[in-house]
Image 1 (tube, rainbow, N blue to C red):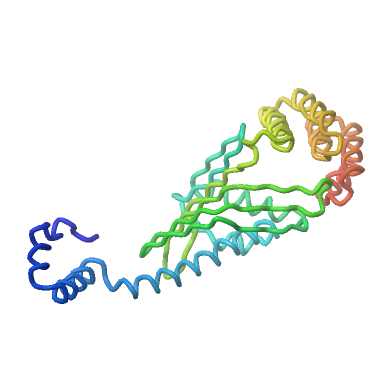
Image 2 (cartoon, rainbow, N blue to C red):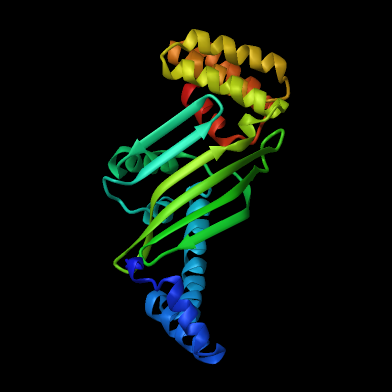
Length: 266
């Protein structure tokens, strides 16, 4: 770290001015180089590093939705201090340590079916230092096979560190922006999240009632039916679970995960 206590006082700059503009320019350039390094070299290096970081982040996001387990896993520094945080209206999750979220995510991705999707990255900001980088951007995910088409807009944050010459993610923060809006989609998402939290609290019957109400408010949405089926499964009501999976598949016939769950019940 540079010792900025050595930065010359204003009197020193007055002295430089008295030497003439040319001498002052030369001395100030030498001063800047001594304290900050060659600014042109640093800019070129930073631009190259930013491009590399952008490629790593974009590849990691694509790997996640494409269910490419090895590619998603390889972007992370797999140590105890890494963190993963998810935030939406009514939901917050923060996990510290690769061993506490990495293996579970690998299992989930490995068992999931890939859905056709498109990704857009907007409003991207990347800052790099010698061994640390920070990125922030809007991520627009569209699942094109859903009925209706599902679109999710989130604000993403990543912190990366350079270890053994390679950039690795050490922190992820995902903020689901649209769940904080006053739109029908945001309200549906909030209702589904409330029901999901009931499921996680082992209150499957109460969760079912929330999902049932949501299905009545949003009759064209398949997700409440799939979650009603999940609630019935947890209650041991196999026949009702099958019925609700079929109801959901009538609305979203291409949902591979629901097809798989139904096949396991039948």
